[in-house]
Length: 145
View 1 (cartoon, one colour):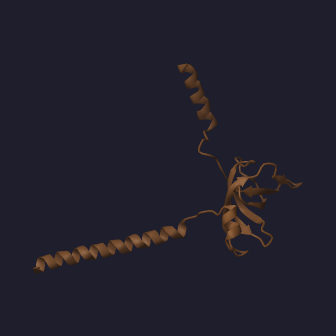
View 2 (cartoon, rainbow, N blue to C red):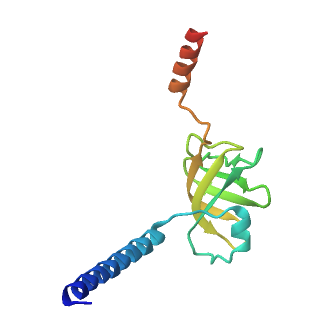
View 3 (cartoon, helix red, strand yellow):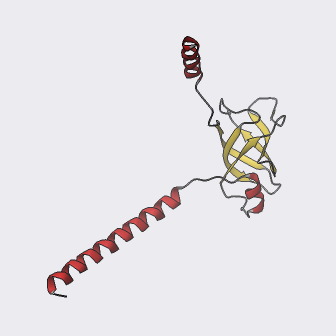
């Protein structure tokens, strides 16, 4: 190998090392920001400290939603069909929140295995379509018929 080839090889190896380090750092940073949630089964089987904030996701069980007299606090049960966890929340619920609907909550699990939510997000299924768009599509399909 002559001197030119050695220099080219050194440059190529240097670029590969620098790119590898950069990709590694980006992947490490992304891993820190991923915000996944536990299902009730995973949360029951995982040792979570009482002061640790976690995200819990599942479906609100039918006939489990109970509001207090003031209407500011609500309790309900979240399930993943294998395990259920009681949840308490103080605040305004999202408009998509209802029984049988998917929810993702941020909060803490207390020593009695009750989840105290500080934030509740309602999920819609993949079949969701805004009412305005649904009406427009129905009108268009009626015109074609």
